[in-house]
Image: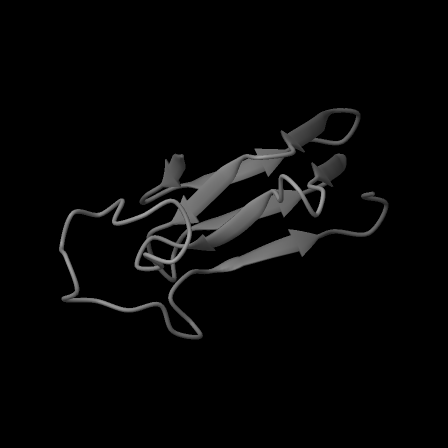
Amino acid sequence: VYVLDHCAVIVPAGSSLTIPAGTVVKVAGSHDRIVVDGSLAIEGTSAAPAVVTSLRDDSVAGDTNGDGATTHAAPGDWGWILFNPGSQ
């Protein structure tokens, strides 16, 4: 499990980011985001999905934030994935 917390992941033009099958990325807050100027490939399969979700989402990879049942995933929990013009 990878956690984005208080950050932006930026994929520059001419670069690529691959999230392999079976990978879980949990995003902590509405200020956290992925900005793509290059290429983003999310390579999940039905047997091994690649998931980008809220840090509060205990249904994927368990209770990553360690708060038990105190929080639950909801729309707006995390920022966005932005594909800028020319990105892939």
